[in-house]
Length: 190
Image (cartoon, rainbow, N blue to C red; front, side, top):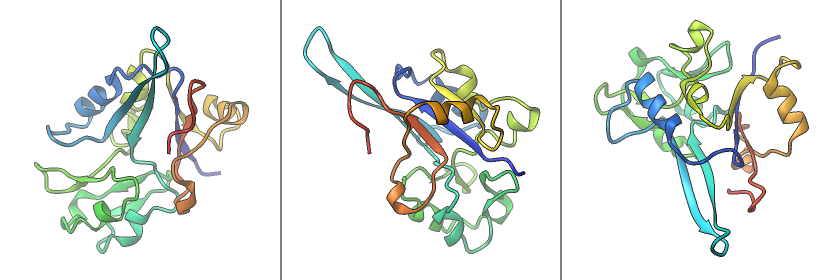
């Protein structure tokens, strides 16, 4: 059975500290002005002194039906045997079709390499060494869980069976593999 890597963002545990974004930037040599990962902070909501915020991870959704892969004319954007949406830099011609096709608006052109870029779960670095993605590893509140849902004994597979969860914009048919545990203090962010 092949792997089906997913990441779960628990919006109840997230504190919006951006440690994930900083670790991603460092691990993947992301230049200033662009980002593979950010946590958007909304709020405050409620009445003082009982204020709260909502935290929403913005990164590649690792779509199983990825529009960015479909439109790529050179095969630079592809889904590997591991199921991870990735980029072959040597094949990228900088046409930006993938950037335009991404319904989540998380792809970008790296201003230094002139190659399309996005989150790939640290596939070429940390995953290759058997480690967790940088964002998961540094999260101080364990708001991020990564793993293979095809492994029924994995923490991520058990979590998705036991906890209410959602994915962004499922009506698009992209089959995203970033799951979210909705905050108990507010509705689901779309």
